[in-house]
Image (cartoon, rainbow, N blue to C red; front, side, top):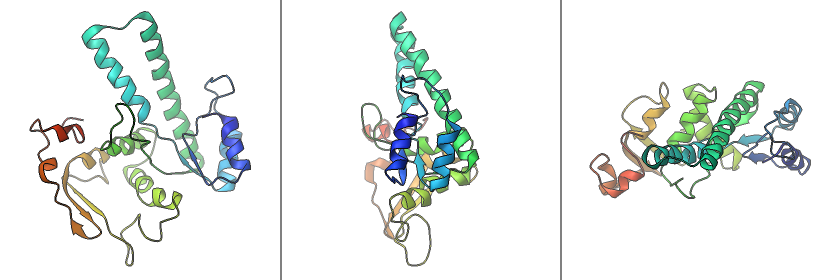
Length: 212
């Protein structure tokens, strides 16, 4: 969560850094190009988990619309928004420098429930990736960061095949990832049952909100 923390990871030979926040020892937002250069030099991968902050921001905005915020709560919210902007800026600069990015949700905690991973991919695009780069970060790069890309992560002969079928074209608009039609795990179609009734008010709609 700090630049020094990232340097400590690199000193220890860590191959994937989670969060990778460019904060100084006092928690200030200070981007460190030298840290990015060292990450790139050592070939480490970065998983910034950039959507989580927006979940808290969105929930607070909902509270604000219904009940308002105290001055203290508004100050915290303003800080979160600045933090989100800085995280996206840091993501953009690291990606532009050539650092390999892997998408990971950091779920589940609080309002960050399982089933929102598509939003993480969307935020990779907000951070400067093309749709295909973001999809690769969520699949092949994620597999590489876990050292299992010889088995999963891409559709190739000899690999275990999991397929998400969606209505739309995520290679053009990654938001289409939420429009799930079918899921195939290890080559077999998954019976999603009532999970396929998104938009009907079913409790499972919380996992894949129709208007998210």
